[in-house]
Each structure stands twice: as C-alpha cells, then as structure tokens.
Picture: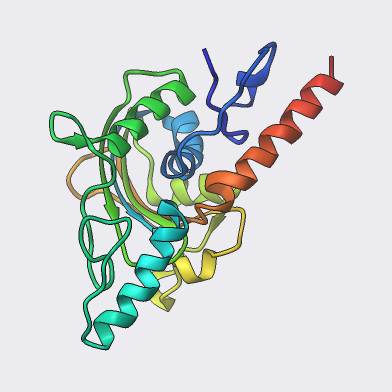
Length: 235
C-alpha cells in the first residue's frame, strides 16, 4: 500500500514505511493543506470544491495551446489544439480526465479517494468539480467545508494564519485576496475570502490558490524527501 504524503498534513505516513512513497495530485494537495487546521479544530464532515486548474497542469503542450490559441483567436485565425478537446483560449472546459463514476471525471474521483486516504477518513463527503481555465500557472479552488463544530470566520482565519505552509491574504475591503499571478513561483498555499456559509449552520467558505508546479508537485516531493531524512535521523 503506497502512502500519499503531504508533509503538513500526514507526516506520520512515512513512519516505518519501506518502499515507494507518492505525492498526491496537485489539486488534492492544496485542498488538504487548507483543510487540515479546520479538520483538527472542528472535524470536517463535508467538502464542496470547484477547481480552476491552469494549463500548466496539462504539461508543455497545454501551455502551448493556451499561448498559441490565444494569439490565433486575437488574430482571427484557426488553431489546431493538441491537448484539449475544445479551445482553451478565452474559454472554460468543465472536464478534466475521462468519465469515471456517475457523472464524475477521473480527476474529480481522484480528489475524493486521495483526500480520504491522506486523512484516513472515508466518512468525509466530497463533491468536486474540476474545470480547466485559461490561466498559465497556479490552480485556484473555491472550497466550502461543513464541520461538526461551528467555526466563525474569525476563528477560521486565525487557524489558517497560524498554520505553517499557509499564507492568509484576506481583506475584501481593500481588494486583497490570493490570485494566480501573485502566487506563481511560491511554495505556500494561499487562502482568502474566508466567510461563513449562508446556507448551512456549520459551513466555512474560502478561496485557495497554489502553484501547481511547486507545492502541487516539485516542492511537495522535496518536502517528502526532507521528511524522510529527518525521520531516519531520529531512529
């Protein structure tokens, strides 16, 4: 059984494990980092998440499709896309991955399975929608969590602000919140727009942005390696 590890969330998963250790999907990684302090404080029962995933998540060809497709659209020319089923320039594509389970895609079901495995809790109900957007880098997520114990928005902000690996940018009055352009090239998970859900008593909604090539991939892998070195040194 290969453990999925996000060092800020489940560092104990590497303890006494011999063999392969894996890093989860980029969209899962930033979500579970954001979930962790709320789950520890009030236990999360349900998650509704919509992801807005950058073209860099589809590799070099995805990036080329965005750049060249945008140029062609502005010039009024046709462009043959190499990665996406539809034009990504000036468009949103509400499908990432193939059909998998009762209308959900493989990317969406991966978020469900990986989150359950990382937290060791299959009872967390998760409803994901994954969308490809015409942004070069950094995935964004709109997340709503429902907890067993009520958390105020102020409590949630305090929890986020006190958590290593999370940067809180949350000042709606002054138009300050995380955006892909500001988070590009950074290792943290950025959170803003924290507010209480108007539709249920114990809900907290927030906005989450992270560099999918760094924390979503390379940085998390390096952090896993550092965690392994520390755990072996402690033996």
